[in-house]
Image (tube, chains in turn purple, brown):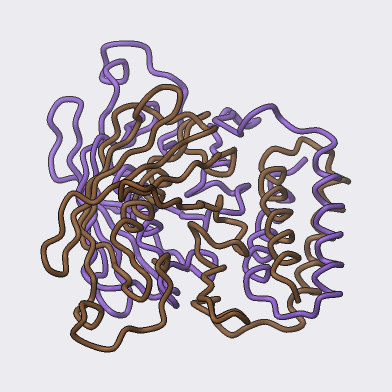
Length: 204
Length: 204
């Protein structure tokens, strides 16, 4: 099984989510679509992992978080975010959010903005074998965020022991739409005081 | 076209999301699944609404937000949340979050917790024909939230002109896992100073 085939399946299911919401096809077509989806579910369900995807290790020993709701390449809910490390120590992610992420008509749900900012701010605190978890995050909505192309950016403001203080924002052609600041906690055992666990730097 | 058929389609696509992540079926089965999904996308795409679902009016004159990422009955990403108004003025929603909402292994992504709390806190501020939008929300993570059954609760703390101050939390068998407080803004034109727009009380 190549990852690529499963990634392509997730990509197709992402398109299916979009057209499930937006279809104005007639009742016969929707009934046919329903039967095809149920057939697909049965086909894929012949062997299921127990529980969720979690963190796995690929054949090259790399950690894989393909089920993650923000970045998982096998998770059709994930846009997916692709977080880039910037040379100056920040991170950013360019993402396109369509009909599936709607809150107010034509706009991204405020909670979805919070999800993306939580992930991207947290990504500043993560390092290989040193996961960090959100302690507190505050999200300020400056203006509505239209569905479409967005950039999320974040950087570390300061580090105090186990706490990383990060800030960031979402922006689009309208400018900055949502700001956030958060505190991310690195568990004590990952501060050089214990054995590092084989967790990905992008697992939250 | 009955809503029920489209709701059933969204329910089946929700199951498809779950098994897309969790399937360990062989490569031939995944390739077949991919072909079936692409066929379904084509079938539903014969007629698509432009843009997103937005807010529509059903044949009984009720507003429908079926595309909403938190509560939309036609949106396979939505769990969907079903927000209940409590007699004492609060709101709550019971929800089950499975593999599709994962962050840390076996746990709900912190950003997904924020999304749900944003929606449920905001629901305290919404009234028919009087929408409210998130101004600021602060989310505090007390402990990891395991995937599974959850309750989200919120209530209004006070109202000051256009601002509604709300608090709430997520809880499960482990107790309260995440707390939030937020300020929700009712636009001036909905404060009795202008014409109410035909927006749903659950649109964000």
